Image (cartoon, rainbow, N blue to C red):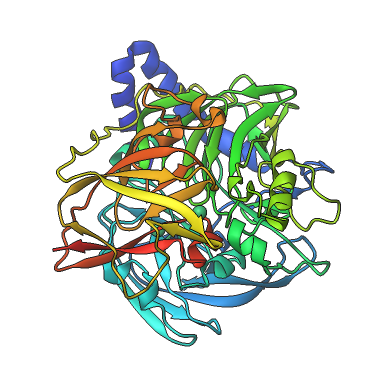
Length: 547
Ligand code: C2O
Ligand code: CU
Ligand code: CU
């Protein structure tokens, strides 16, 4: 790395902060290399509760970083991998070979405006297709299940990354196999960068895989041989498939070694169905942290919170300020207990469902239950502060220019979520690959009023191909309402650009989406619940943007 551009930025940044800032920044610059070197030499941590080092994106292997540009091939295939340490077992992964390196589920790091040509080779024994979750692409490149290819076949993607900087992800989307394929391992991150993002990385001295750390949260079940188990019962197909243990970056019971500085965590809830209520606990106390970004990139400024809900497919980009921490301190990323609101089963005829919901609501799992109930308290990641380093950066006051929500140009549209005869529905319908029940005009900005029934479950609703803004939450449960940062009921994690929006039972959430795109002709996308069992069960509709 040439130090020149970096120094130039620091001087420019410091000029506004005054002369003391300049001295501080340059001094820091001189120490930069030592600090980095010290980070590597630490002896391993002994932590019986969290024995496994967190898997970090590196130069190869699982979650290796691929600076994506131009053409490359991604193969979906079975590989042997030890998710449970010492117990290698078959999992599915996307493999990329590049310059002698083999990457699995690579972190695709890409600059806005880059053209990609990706050959997808489906080496599974069933159909599949890749969906680039959150990306603004035309329908040919969106990975709509209509384009799923059989085992042995290929699909060519060619698109320009049009999104602003942010943490996006990719996963399979064949109907109705999405839940199973994601669960068995197929998912990865796309990290988009632009000038604002590089400025933030420079200002805070963030490096991907060291101090800018993706955290992919996924709950899983294993058998005794360390193999993933996916065999949803009828109940689980209706409610969602929950795991027993939560993996972070495919690491069970992980720990992470830190220094007394600011860290960035890009958190993706990559679970099929589990929600998290995320907090950092230090002893009995919850540490404040800053939400700096959501699904579609950076917010205008950091928002200080002590907890946040994260539903499946949502992303939350946060800063954790450990500058005052001491070597020897440790803290834990936790999911606080919450009411999972499985209210669909609270009715006289519910039978087994009601019992399931009772367990969930009270966290009182039967001892032999193969999963941890939704809403249960969970310890996810232990962070050990091990090092004292010089670090003179501050949490920035501003982050990004976020355009205001588009003004509606069409009549509001009602989107209802409910269940009938065990099937989750959108506007009374379940998925039909050939039907396009929602047609919007290209260029229209539509407000959607998403009304989740009282007798329902939380549904994280996702629209392909566009990013939306959340306008308001009404009728929210207390556990959500108390997180509001403005009178429209929005929490910090509802701000900025969103592609997946949580909707609780009894709640009405208004979002606005501008359906503008630069492609020729009609485009067919989809809207669906990102509880993957709900999606695979048909809680999904085609969405046509008519040219
Ligand atoms: Cu991440 Cu259609 O989904
Ligand atoms: Cu998507
Ligand atoms: Cu759902």
